[in-house]
Image 1 (cartoon, helix red, strand yellow):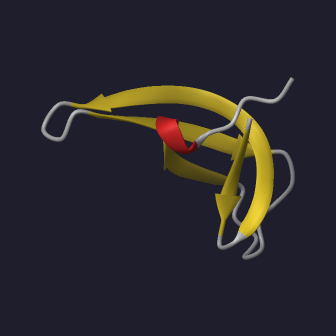
Image 2 (cartoon, rainbow, N blue to C red):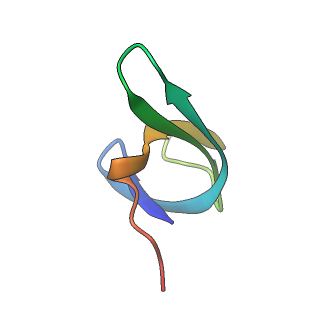
Length: 54
């Protein structure tokens, strides 16, 4: 999958998805293929903000 982190495109693998019942959101835990701009190796992102890679 692909998403944006601090304005930079990043790619990674979805490790898990959590539903937040209070707000009704789906949040994905993503492990990045390469560290992000600040050295981060994983992030949580809304599922609707992910782009599937072909």
